Picture (cartoon, rainbow, N blue to C red):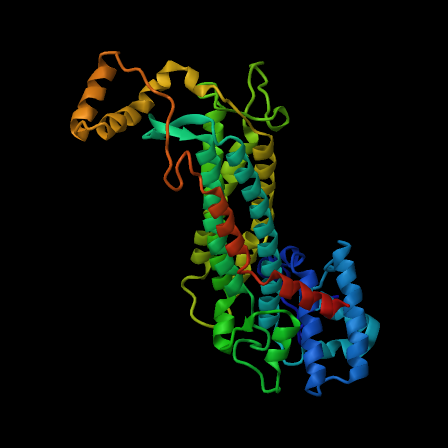
Length: 445
């Protein structure tokens, strides 16, 4: 038996059906409970404009809450022959309530239904990502403060350059995440707007109350223009993907540093034993597989905006089936991002730092700038001081003074970690997580 909302009195060729449905049923499992939430808000609005009786609404809400609970338990399935999540939910309602279950689609198209599902799903994922970014941020800042006195070489062109510190290194990635959070906040604000009521992209002759569904679902506002609401399909995913890619860029760079610093040639950090793997032939090996996989997965995530762009960038306004394919690259990306953030936070927490790097004389030249500055501060012209120190190094006569005094904002002696923490808190305050949570609880109570 086939259950398709659009089907009339003929059956589609099975191979065509296989090709057109593709992985959509599998992808719709990500959206199931959000489809139920959207339907609850929609029918509450339908009753307010006289398209449902109060008794019908009450019965439908009870059954939708039951289906939501099934989703929460991980027991929701899209049955064989049922095209998508929307059809499955409607089928479950009609089994329990008869023709009443068919009334939930009034004033709605699968186009705005999937739009609202995607928005509700995505804003929950953004919240999860934001919380995990904050966990990693806190670990980095804690390590920055813990090791703020421990010097290490700073590099340019992968050549030993100037003194840096673990306070600077850990703190730099913390501040990078604070900036990344701004992108995530922008993605949240574009996501948290209500497309429901735009129907197939051209509105409805029913007197829908879109303000009501906006409030019921905890959206900040709605996508006002119904054509633009439909045009938002793909655009939202691309913009969110750019935010994920920005975080992934920070993770990939940090992972590369960690792999480098863990190698014997550097020996700057030691990774926890449980986070490394061995070799089948070399008994001494402790490979930084976790960071290598974080790097690879993060680099893969940085390609996500381009994948989405290439699927949807040459489409005119209106719905096209091409947009279905975006689900396949977009929906699973969040789990991969969350995995990377959790692993990174864990391994940073356990990472040990070599506090005696500078005992090795090969790093002595990195203090040359300190000596040039000391001579210049004592009255010698800077260019003369530069030449003197350079000649001393070439002649093997340079003896570094490893006591350095950097005091300006953001330097080794003044990390500004408190300011970086404030920056992160400011970014986090720009999300309306509480409002969304309150609205969803109110719908489900």
